[in-house]
Amino acid sequence: MIEVTRDTSAYTNAYRPTIVVPPPKHTLRNIIISLVAVIVIAVVAVLVIVNVKHTQLVDDVKHALVSQNDIMKRSAKDDAYAATLPPGVASTDKVSIAATVSFDGATYCITGKSLVDDKVVYNIGSHSEDSTPTKGDCSSLSNTIMPTTPGLPSIGSVGTDEISLSWEASAYAGSYTVRCATDEAFTKDVVTAKATTTAAVLSKLRGGVDYFCSVQAVNERGVSAWSTSVPTKTTLASAAPVLTITPVSTSEIRYSWTPISGATSYELEYSSDINFIKDVKKVTTQATTGSTVGLNANTMYYYHVRAFTSQFDASNAAFSGVIEDKTKS
Image (cartoon, rainbow, N blue to C red; front, top):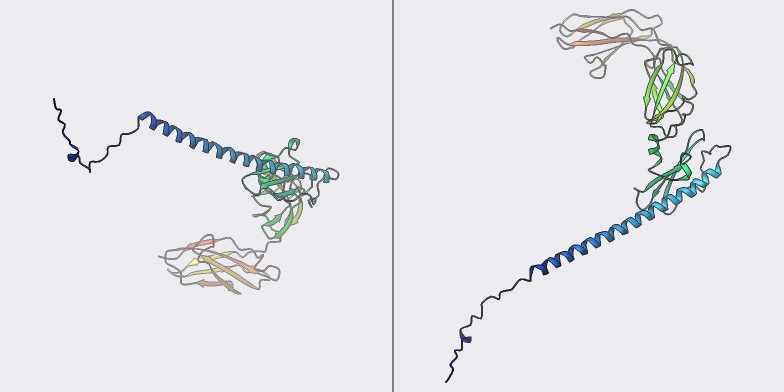
């Protein structure tokens, strides 16, 4: 028996696309798991390296602070620290150092900051327990340590109703309270002001009066003792004229005032602004009567006047009380 076979190779489509059989699902899953594992290991490795570097930076800062704290302690004489820092208290090639000593020499604080990462900051000083550095710079202590007493205030300018003064900074102060009174016990005519710097101006005082002033440091922990008080005296206020005004038209207001003995001239100010900040006009005259013209109709205007004498010039002559009236409509 003869077996006959048919050759079909001639009919095969040479351009038929090859069908790729996907790998089994469990193989793809294994590949994904392997990739995730590699990524996790890489992340953990980076975190470990970063943590090791950070720890090293922290150790560098703490070591520098501890060694320089020892120098500060050895420099103390009679339990006081000199305002001029010992030569050893200085920046290193790895750590930036800043140190401050309170005005009375009772306390000091040293801040150390990494030169590689300025977020690595610690402090140490007379406040530190067991000479252990604390995270943060010295300014952060204003919330945790009672402030020291500020230095003796220094009187700056003195006017008829205000006194400006400044003082030595207090260690760990967040702000200051300043007070002036007409008696050294601070029970009479007490005026106070708040300050965030080491200077302040106290106003609404009486002219030609003796005052005593002192300052106190404040932070979230509490307040310091008041500084030693310093005496001063406001300048004598000049006599002010008694002013009268009269609207006569929609654009004119007449004025007059009582003469002041010894006056060489007078200065009248008027404005539509009660605070005399905007639209202020001035009239300097030797007369005690006159008119202001070119005003707006049906508008309220405010006036005050002062007298200049040989004793009181523009820096200390007192204005009269403010008088107001409205132009005619």
